[in-house]
Amino acid sequence: MAPATSTSPLSRLLLSLPKPNAQPPLCAKPPSADSGAGATSKNLVLRRREAAAAVLSAALLTRVLPAAAAADECALEATPSGLAFCDRVVGTGAEAVKGQLIKAHYRGMLEDGTVFDSSYGRGRPLTIMVGVGEVIKGWDLCLAGGEGIPPMRVGTRRLSRAHVVLL
Image 1 (cartoon, rainbow, N blue to C red):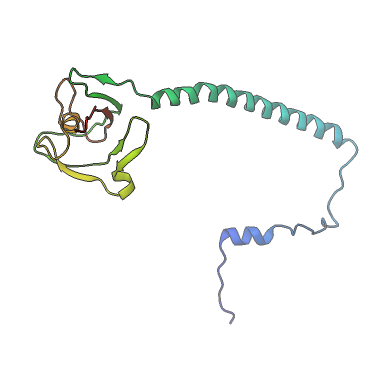
Image 2 (image 1 turned 90 degrees about the vertical axis):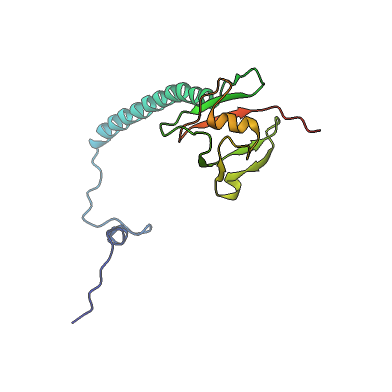
């Protein structure tokens, strides 16, 4: 008895396809003279549909892409102390509270966009206790709330800016 071999559906499909240089089978029907007009008509309809789809796609992209770019920009709300924030995404989870141990991803950037520190680069979030001075005051305020800034909820993506002066 021959050993049973199983082939995947993809393998069977690939094996059933004709070779690139293979001749058509002798029983293949050559195109008739009257099928040319029908084929041209079908091709014309297909080309019209493709053109309509291209126009519709272009119109859709001119609406969607600027909206996506505008959504990426965030208007910062400034507090009297100079701390500014903007929620890019408002989470639906629990609010951060003072004294709570949390994990947060962050990216520290200079005004020119240079990244000086990032938890994403290390591949793991930072674990801190909120509101007890483990991080700069502006970050504590952005996490637990204060000075008119609402506390962050789990899932929130907040952009914040603090002016820091080195002495």
